[in-house]
Amino acid sequence: MMKTKASWILRIFAAVIFTQTLYFKFTGHPDSVEIFSALNMEPGGRILIGILELVSAILLLVPGTVAYGAILAWGIMSGAIIGHCTEIGFEGDLLSLFLLGVGVWVCATVLLVMHRHQLPLLRHTYEKPDSSA
Image (cartoon, rainbow, N blue to C red; front, top):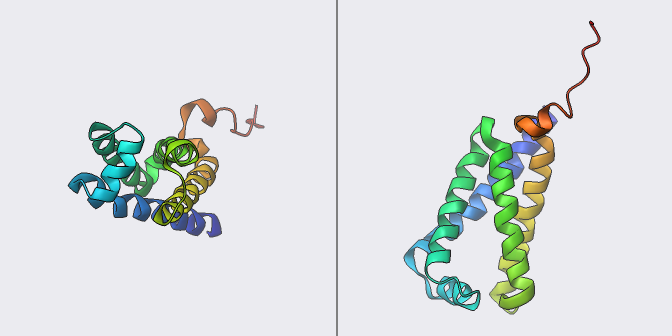
């Protein structure tokens, strides 16, 4: 029961962060354009990342696809964290964006561990042996 509540809290947190930023990415907000220009990803990368964040948010909220959403979120946020450390920086509002990215990255990591049974490659690794044989 507690594991289910924790999972939902983490999933909702990550999905809300992703969906809050979609408006800025899809409308070409100047702050978003500036960030993606610093990464040489404007405009195609900005739109692609927005689409991937939307897909990840949906996958995180559908119970049977949480692990897949977590993998996608982990990858997106890994890229964002690397981008902040190399090109974007942390000044002003960028620090808040970085910290939110780290928060989503941590959520995705924990969710991936919690829902690893949804992944075929890991399902057999963590199954308990059948003792009836």
